[in-house]
Image (tube, rainbow, N blue to C red; front, side, top):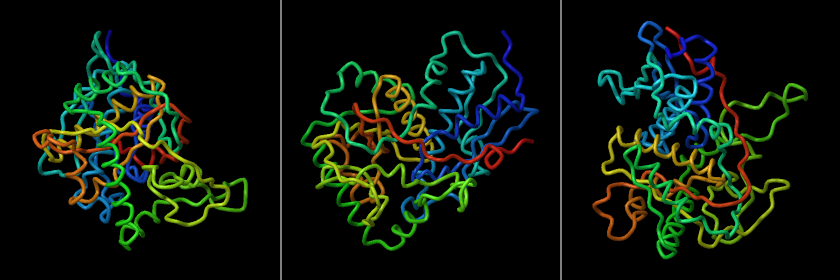
Length: 335
């Protein structure tokens, strides 16, 4: 069977799915460029959406764009294309993070398209999870998913989980004392506004709306970022989170931009598989944003295992709230 043509409707659908990926503060730091004559869809960094205070090396930017790239691959396979992917294909163009050639039919043994239903279902859940244990075979499946993208996902014991939680809380305290980090976070926090049916402006297509903040952790058990920055939010309740949440540490052997892109793809593969497995997920990166804390997130004795790129919290509980997305017209350029 020949691959479907790169018509505008299907390319739009692929880009919409790609842009459903998670990113730090939902900044959505990506752009897409379609090169019709080459049947290539590029994933490009959008430097106007970088976060210099919290992500000075653009590591989180690459992670987010890598997650969008994985969604693009899944969507392309769903549409019948084999996504032939090259990372950082042009050293003279640093904004070009990946090229995906779409001119061949998807392989018969494709394992990407089955993940497609999870793209629209996956949302970050900033709510407490139940104490129900995640079966070992499910955790093993998620570790295997990370390996498919060249990364390692491990699940620390309760002792090290407490260490990670302590590091997260220390990172939160540091951020509170950093005026640039506070201002940057505030710039991506969206207050509730009325739509065009009311008297206010339409909701922006990015950032974290109040509806996605989740409840305020009671005590120090919650690993959630405080998007309210201590401000009282009407109607926002205070609840107790898991004392020992199930955390996964996603790591790479090295710590280069290409490794960050691989980690972003592995992250999204894990999140989509977890969604299909009936799990809810959230991401915890605060401790990874401070170099002097990041090294300690690794499990003891894992010095040879490279760098932790993301901490994933998972379990059974309420599904997350959808966050706004930019329009395809704002993200896609066709040449």
